[in-house]
Length: 142
Image (cartoon, rainbow, N blue to C red):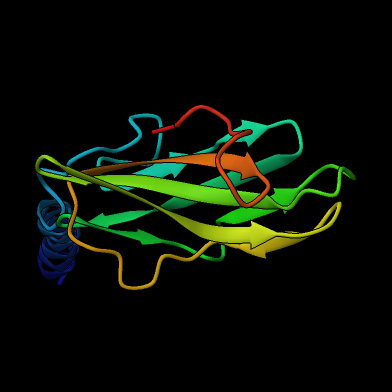
């Protein structure tokens, strides 16, 4: 009976390890990720500009980033009459595109960040801009 219990425990432990490895392979070859996050499949980007702050966290699925809206936000931190915009720049091969993902309006206003139907890409970076154009922006953060 004791041998059987040890065998079952060993099999479960081996199964957990094998599942973990199989799960990690799903995102192997990730294009760009934050080495300080919880693993090569995860990313965390935190652009900042006086007047706005953001946290963008998520996970790569192959070449497609999933931004977790429960962990990602944009906040307007100034009473300057300018909305905070979160922009994303992404690359696929030699093609580079930019678009804004979120807008927070008013001092203290906070919004979730989402990127529904994100394309298959090689990398992305984010920045915050104050106002609808890109005249006043933070540096791109990857």
